[in-house]
Length: 171
Image (cartoon, rainbow, N blue to C red; front, side, top):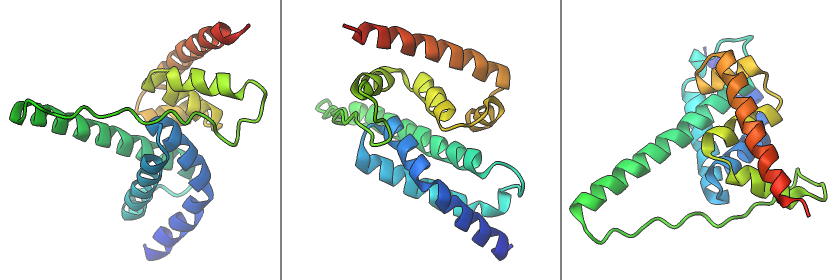
């Protein structure tokens, strides 16, 4: 079992950059993205015994990362709702600064693409980013916990919204 966990840990490190990029897009904040990746790796290592050898490690890690992101958002929302009941003077959470540029996007339209992707709602952004990472529709379905047909329709809708937003940037 320890050998299996060590092997999962070794192979998981190869996906660190892709996980960080995905976390950065989800969180829209570099520091939060680092925290998400760290927590995802911690959960992956703790659950390494549950990983099925021969299955897609990258998709498994992306699913863990997405679940960490969702858990944090839900926890933050519950805490905010609780604080509203306790205190009338709750400080509103400031949205993360919009650092929209990624080193991987090197085209002339990078800023427009980045802005358009960032402007997508989280479900659309997630399915687009997983597709860009090269995951198949069935792998994306595994990450999202839905049927491959659902991924197809979500991806189609997300692409349409992205196309419309990018068309708006044209001079």
